[in-house]
Image (tube, rainbow, N blue to C red; front, side):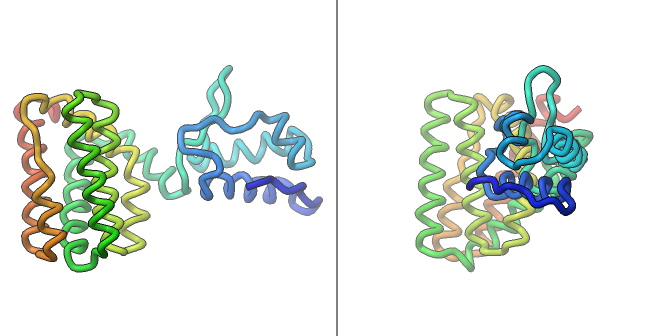
Length: 228
């Protein structure tokens, strides 16, 4: 996606809208560095002060993160996720896990009755990557693969609100999954039961499998003192 030369009316608002479009469309990736102030000013055909004001507004909204001496990075992909990220930074791990449980258990139940054949393929592929990452003891890969599995389950609900909410919650989930993975090195939590229940269309079994998975994590983290 290319940037357009801004018109004269309400320049800052126009620049804010264009920068926001770069973020929400995925042209600028989450956690990625955006072009410099000088480059943006040239692309947009506006002064650097206009760009600076627009970036400041998006930073205040939680979408961008200005790092002194380093540059500006994409912090969130929507204003909702930006607000959620600010709130979750002050949340306790237990609180995050409890919300995660509510979202993922309901997602598993809904997915069992709404999933398509392609959804099952996606969930299976994510589960395979999760198993491989665990076997290789690659913590970073495991965190991403585990999250990808749950994202695939949520997408199988075909509930746009739930999908968007879970997407906005994902940054905190990475921290949650990393904490669980680090504490459960000898206590693997299988997810294949969730897949089987969803594939068979058994909503009750899917709900129970999702709940059992989250209870296992909550109990284990409590026992290891991660939630103290």
